[in-house]
Length: 539
Image (tube, rainbow, N blue to C red; front, side, top):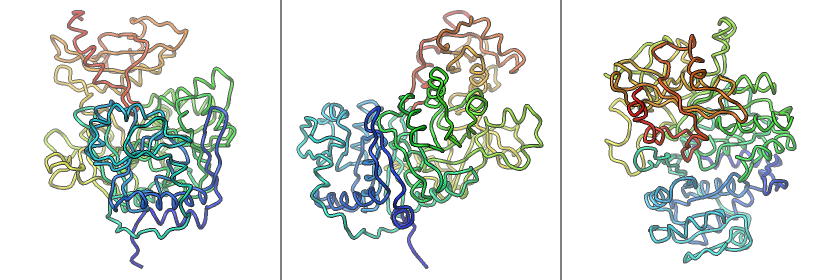
């Protein structure tokens, strides 16, 4: 039968077959709110009726400034299945960036947490198209002074919980995310029903040990960051329970308690959040007895994190890779049948690879002249992709700004090697590679090496200007609490672990590293601060 590929089919399937599966949201450091998928979808119907009553038209962009919780999941389905476009905004962006993307997307309504009202009030003179705001998770308007202000629960209270969902075409736009804008303005990626459903199906069939109907998932990645890596669609599809940490995903004490209390079996997050959780458990003597699988992505992950999960807590940590432009996930590292044939050191290092592409994604690596490089695990080149869930162009961009070449390949900005079996290892971002005396040095490999030192909590390596070699690696590191290590000892740690000429020229110890709005180390900031350090020190 010729039926459209829409997210509405996920909602209908989940409500029919997994309707009683529990949805849990942290509402304070101690308390949770409980409902079910049926409860979420019932309220999503009320939301759709409310959006109609507000005068929303098909295709209108409906923005959210919201944490991970039940109401945000209701917005995912009430907006998307209602024929509108869900635009999730990262509240950690700078004010100018938030104003830019609200205007660029031409958002009509903004659903916001009370704590972000001051941000919107500051931006009100700059915002052009917004008809009004809806305040989440409160009984009042939090003092908002917009022309039209509603309280979410009041808005839903007067609405019927039945509706006739529209039947949008599968190529209709339904969701939108913006890149973090580390260079220039953020870029908008507009997702269709078809692309999101295909991405959901592709990730649901990954041979990754879950998530499945017997799992309870905790998304420790924000729902405003590439749709929480697709989990708001995947979890209902497969019938997994879901536990939302609310505004507490950065609070390891709350996260650890939720994992134990709600018997979470499957979690996904960026390295920083996982490291904070393990550090807390080490101090408190807690455990992860229910957690069966954890996934990490979004930034370079040190080998020590994989080993701590496995050796100290008995949890398998798998690495993935993806992009906003790919609907989120592009690969996942699941060792194949040849894994046991590798030697001990190869098996130890294997988790550092990003894994094989999901179904529907093609990959290749090229040199600077766009010539394809071999899949031999040695040659490193520019990683390019094409496939079912790869964006064709950015929202409102010209053809020259699309990032897609004449043959349909999207340039990711990553540098990678590919093994003969298709396993990818990202060796660096193109802009973060260090070219010393005409030869390339991987900042990621140096960072991974530095973070195996027992005294180092976090490390970043940048290119610093050098009088003789043009660029040389500079290590910026954060020590663990109560740990001491000298610059000389840390540099000596690299001996025998990397090529001699790769070894950083100097070390700078700092209290903390700067991070972007998506939790990645901001190497742009570090280069601005320390790019001339070697010249100034005459190193």
